[in-house]
Length: 477
Image (tube, rainbow, N blue to C red; front, top):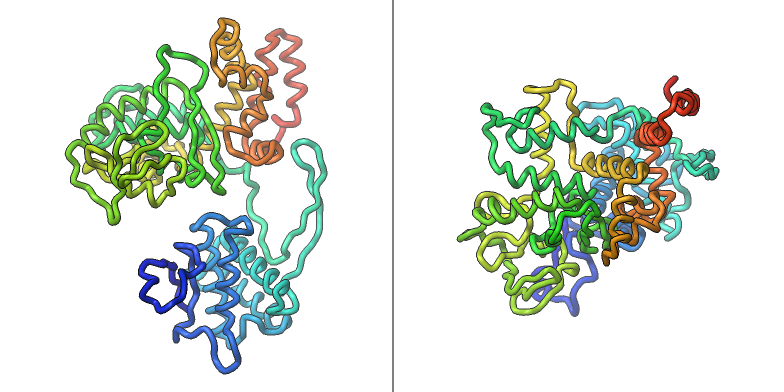
């Protein structure tokens, strides 16, 4: 089976009455003989492709998700074909095939073997396809068994759950380190800058682009940006530095096309991290893009850029309407990419995962063998924990109250003086509800933050005893 990513470029020459209603980048599954039907009628690939095309309107808005689901269907369909079983065979034959497929994927040949989480993703995809197929009369039954249960949310509400019996249980999520403590954050930032743990130059360091890497990861740690958001931020969307340094964070707006689910949101950035970004833009980035001859295919030339938008190929466009693909094709007025992070030749830089992987490996080898493998999303977890800690201790609230009391006209300060810490974090993380934020925090080590805040609020012997009693069960684990 062939997996093809659809593009409508040149559709005018396809002898069609109108442009196809298939989104750009949508995966299309085609049998090896390039046919979609035979003497028995439409083949299963027709139903598979219809299901894939409906993904954007059923909650799966990311092209990466589309490709992942298409790959799982492809592997499943190929396995069935090898055993002479139709995708829409009767339930008995499909359940037998699923049993064999589970053995093949979980304990079969090394090249086909999956870890538990990857297998669960395959099960989820195949089950979702068959549930859709039953609703659309392609088959009569879903070839899976389910069990019902319940669980208690962090806020105490009991919820019902349904588990697919074909999934496997993995290790508890909290058993793995998900965020960086402050000493490790400092160690990481020093390593990115080419320094040793004391902040002194590391003479064995042979890396480049230290200004870009330090500024970019500092931005991720200070804002909680997802990788897609961080990689596609333009240089003109960075807010200006306040006239006077302030402890109240500066708002940072994120464009809907770059955010998860296509929902724009607003996070914040502290003045120290913002200053580091401006230093990079003024020095290292300016040197990289000056006179750059880099040009992408189908370039989008920028003129008269402002914080809100620019003239792009002669037409004014606001930054918040540009897609990631369009952002990667932006060419700045003086040359080079319009994205914030660039390579030495002025072209866009988006490979933050490699920067973090190499830096983590160097820290483990040179300075601390226990230093974890840092991946991009860990910076988001670290932001959540650091922000929650400051919110619980009242750091941001006190700073905001100071601005309000002195007559400052600062919307962020007014917001911080009135909003609940959990609601603040919900907005910054871009979660749909506070229940999502609660569940998210439940997977991280939030108990430590609340315990330390409890102890420091009333640092008396009696308070310390009470705190120990409050967290006795937690410490005993």
